[in-house]
Amino acid sequence: MNSGGPTNNPFLWAPVYHEHGVSGFLSWSAWVLYIGACHSGCLFEPGYLEDKSIYAITSSNCSQPSHSTKKAWYGPGTGYHSWATQFGRAWICDSEQHERRTRSVGEQFDEVKRNVTKSTVLDFGSKDLKDEKLFRYQGFKKER
View 1 (cartoon, rainbow, N blue to C red):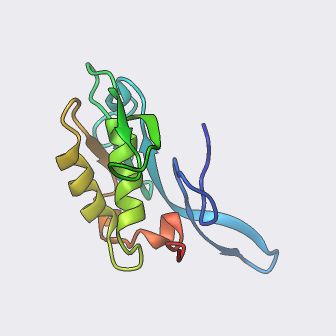
View 2 (cartoon, rainbow, N blue to C red; view 1 turned 135 degrees about the horizontal axis):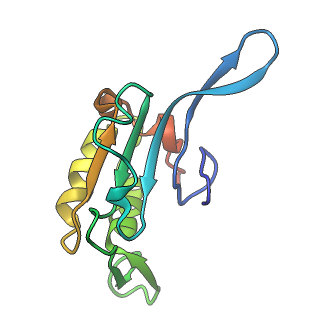
View 3 (cartoon, one colour; view 1 turned 30 degrees about the horizontal axis):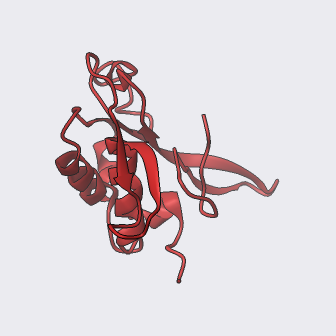
């Protein structure tokens, strides 16, 4: 599994952190997990993550693969193509196209779910994290 954070992209997950006491060690207070794998909806029992400050988004349900697709990554005519899952492409493109300081995790989930047509995108866990802004988990959008 490749971990993500505010300084690299693409992200699989990126936790919100806070300083832990006077020791200076960092600990995670909440997690948003983006899981792009075949049958990834089987990873969590319903209700299992509800009280754990974890919100997980999976690319498919228990009986589906996570479909790959070859698409122009940065738009038609660029000549750059990449193999990606529909889920991964929808999620990364959404992260790059929207202002992460104002877009919520829930808004991104709704958009990704709408754009993925070959599998069923699911969410599990602490639904209150859907109101959090994306920058807390993915960092700020780089200026170009």
